[in-house]
Length: 447
Image (tube, rainbow, N blue to C red; front, side, top):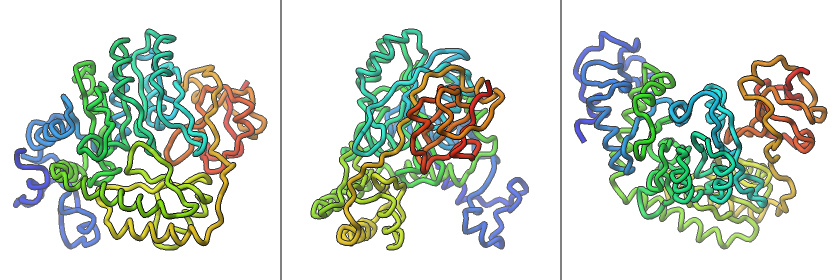
């Protein structure tokens, strides 16, 4: 790779009579510590994210080579902007699109912005955890047959909890039917870069794949990439939408971190050490009596069951360990390339203590299932309609005028425009949030 973003910044010797206003002045000690020394703008030689021809183009080419994509784009606004830009390209307003129901909220915002008419495809439900998991190829095949004119399918793999779908089978089904496939792989940037973590969407042939580097790999939040495989995605239109959804003043510290991340990924020992730590931890965890690891396809995700997840997370926090997420059913501990053996040892020691101290938990409480009521209007129409607030238990049969989210991971339990079912009206929404912030009151379209 040509001289990279990090090296360019590190070796600059000019005085900055240009943005930003802190002028890379080390006298601003706290800003300096935050990375102000690397914070520049599109000066000569720094390239332009929206028309890359120099060091940023070289960075994208290095990403193409490392992930095996035909075309890659550096994203400075996270996976969210990649999902939105790709969705904008793959259809036109009013099109029917297939949407895995467990997609991230950015996908739902794309439906809203582009006026698509979604047909939701339900992933399998993991009853023991109370979460939705993989998207079954047979379910996809049935959805395509029922909606032969659908423009594209958008889905998530891996899920937040580490469940990976059979992307190769789904990709083949979509290709045969002339349906484009967009995979939100925000949690799977590490897949297929080594023999230790497999199941990625680029290798499986998805048309567009969005990845958050920062979730599992050594890069700053919210560093991300968008990969294209094949020629189904119009690259000129994609560049247009990326200009819309990405800042015209992208963060150079962030892009330099992408540069360093791609460089670090050339060393397979990074993955070997990471996987080795996970493997040793899992072997030790087998000795625990009630604390168990739920098996998921992505070994980097540790789904810890056997105790009240909320109580276990608090127990771990009091011992200096902060986990990614906790529900009554489980605790999710996310591992990453930067984890140390000491970190895994500390987690095991705390879990061993919890195994002895915390009571066992036969989980009867599960996260609420998504509302499965029909979409009576588009999301956009419901959000723009006059609305009123009703108590959740009184909402059955009404049309939702707002989102109700489970966050994290940011998946809507209820969608604007959806007919609210009796089941959802009586569901336990503890841990959920709504756009209007008024739970247990829910916004509904006024009659």
